[in-house]
Length: 281
DNA sequence: AACGCCGCCTGATCGC
DNA sequence: TGCGATCAGGCGGCGT
Image 1 (tube, protein in one colour):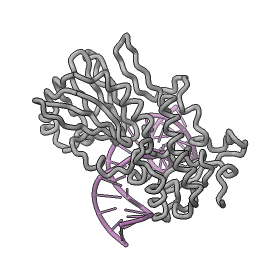
Image 2: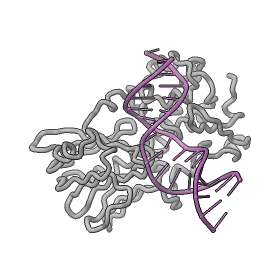
Image 3: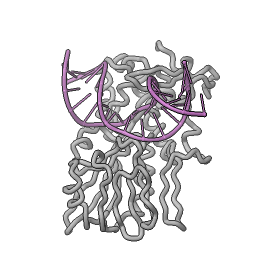
Image 4: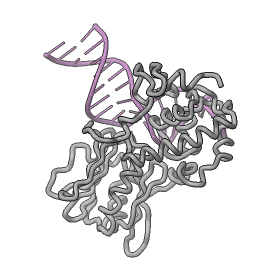
């Protein structure tokens, strides 16, 4: 599922492909994913607008557009199963296309099988985000303060986008493993040293995943001018093969050989090594 | 106001 | 074999 690294890799790959291109038609096939939920207003805002840039904030994509020289932002979120890519205009729209933008020779497709994703002109959610983990705004002091105030298990707290933006279920488990901290430990019980290790581990885990192209196979075919962002398990050096604990229940810890455990916290799977991430200390 | 819980979705997998 | 139940989970909304 797309988290910060996946969204970052997507933004970097997609930006040069859409920059400067004008939206000649808008097709909303699933009004559920757009805000405001009325296709008419959404389509009116975007029709004849031009993509100027694409960046990321947390797990959100920020499309910069202009229309009649006026700049505005389209906010995107991939939810659980969202994908965005260009497709030749002659290709049929994929089954779970939520929104399609006609850009001339290609359509820009937002496909999402579960329709948990979003495309919106409203920036409320983005403004509520906490610090970007890979920027200097993610400080030890701020992070420590947030953890001290919460009795929730630290793993659950890491999923709070107001504490640190962009960490999801996979990288929360991975960062805690890297820091050698039990996911069950109450956030407020971490000592200074653990907080420092976790702060560092979050940054390293995310940066490493970006460097390696994220967990999701992602390719760009220059010849076909196609951008693929898919989940086919096509082999490659993707980060999924390097995950230390996530989805590895029962398999040996890569560090010590102890069987990785799976527990459920806040209705989500957590994976950890009971030896490398002891409950005490 | 922190926190728990539900609903939204579909496809894959599981059990009978 | 077939089919219904269960699971996966980000996030907004709502209740306590």
